[in-house]
View 1 (cartoon, rainbow, N blue to C red):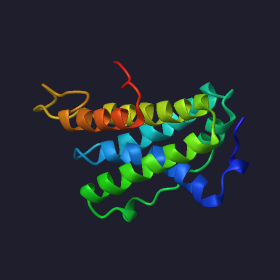
View 2: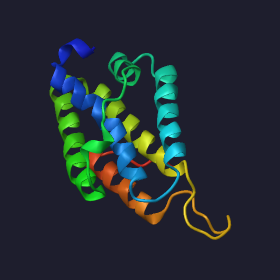
View 3: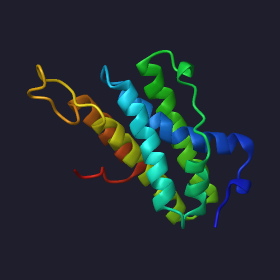
Length: 156
């Protein structure tokens, strides 16, 4: 079983940055809903903490305060480029030090969090009619994240 103590401070910080980066990547492609999207991220952390108690590493990750300063990314393009690189780095660290089950759980947590953020605020439409739960741009980010992580997007 892998634990926080198996990582140095920089590696641990990278692992903690992965999930909120994924959420920010989705939230940044559409306007509005930022508060709902932030609340939805916190909810996923709480739900994962309650549900996945048997995975010590994931429990320590979701129990830690997410380490991400959104001001570190000046533009959506910079967030996309640097954020995806940081996510790859986090997964790479885990693949070196954690079990395959722990790596899979981390990846699943990230894609579930990103999907929840995408669904937190309906997009488009006029006066409430014709709105979609996940916009095309959000869907494209989810597809890119799922592909990069090598996981399926959540259904529904």
